[in-house]
Length: 129
Figure 1 (cartoon, rainbow, N blue to C red):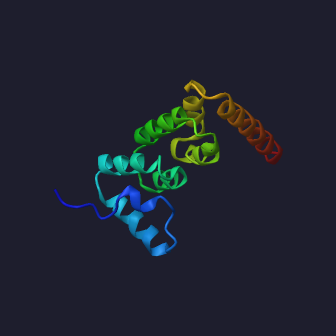
Figure 2 (figure 1 turned 135 degrees about the vertical axis):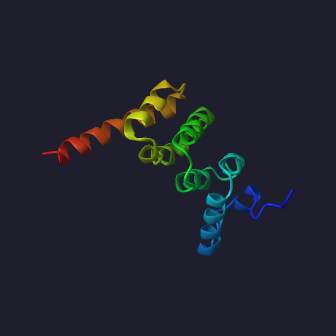
């Protein structure tokens, strides 16, 4: 088996050098979907914010993005809410909220998504005029 160009352990902190980030993202898009998912999943406990960022840029099929969202909602890292909302454009707003609504969330996450959705609707309703 060939050695991996990158390992999740290398990215406990987001790379300070932009070229490393570019190279990692390019490498991820060049490997199989299964290996991309394995890398992103392994990175989650080490650096969940970077893991979400890579999930958004790794050109994953929607069903895999949805599976990651479900896993991450179950992981209940309350500070991950904003990053998870950033997955909505990949899945589409309706599909994203359907997954969120069907998930068993902690009280803090449920409150976060309730307030986010409420403010989102208020803002969009004000700009539709």
